Image (cartoon, rainbow, N blue to C red; front, side, top):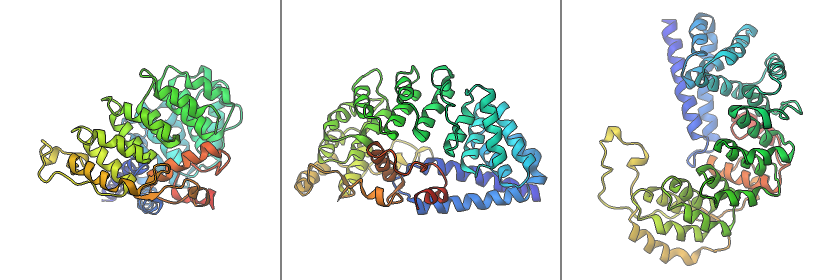
Length: 396
């Protein structure tokens, strides 16, 4: 009976963590909503921790399995206990687990408070690996306690995962500008994207210029680079996003980017693709995100899928292209073309300087990214993927 209850706690923890990962960039959830989700997650972890002695064997087995969310749940439960042996088991599993489980364990070590013994063990692990342990880099930089100088070898000499972790660490901890510049030229797309994000977070003067060059290069542009351009850009970047919206593999990111950038010229670009069956829903969402206006929808529509096979996005209403364009022609004069808009209101990035907890999770992340490019020393310990309580503590 007890093991059945613990298994239910484990499954609920998996579900909640997966949901949290998805909603971290949600336009429909704010910090208060995220805190409520995290409270439910913590309650299940406490339940698991209370029964950790009885379920220790199954929890440790999950650490070496092939399921990321289950590995997170097991690792977080073991870290919640006061047993140093349980924490040691998590650290040992980190070194031998398969990549999916290693990701879950790493996420747990980032999400949970970092105990002194775990921090010391990770520092030793990093030293023994000559600075080339990606999990240790990830966890220590996430908690803002990566020792100085530990990226010197990881940047030029690490494998792909190590270079990705190093790029994220540069964004969190700062570092030499030439490290970020080196990684921007990496042969791995994810490393390049992360290095550009790090350069922006550090306020490096060449970051926006380099990003524009990347987004204008048909071979190097990626969805992530377009999203970053939308966070940092100005009206002169609308044309780049407009062009990329017509490329199949970039369309969704470019359309979402137009919604992020938020100028009236972005809405004009959206009107070009609102009649495209593949992009219509995304264009409708971006239109509403900028203007606050609900796009008229097609009265009768079919997704072409059985209900049980359809995703949430498949079931969204499809905008009526002609009626949406007519609505925009009617209302366009009420929007100043020189400022950015969000939900029909002027968007002022400076508000987040005074109140970094404002807004939905997506807008908050985007505007803080823009703000950090201008003032990189602002909120140096703020980690947007950290638990809400930790975020509030460093911005109080």
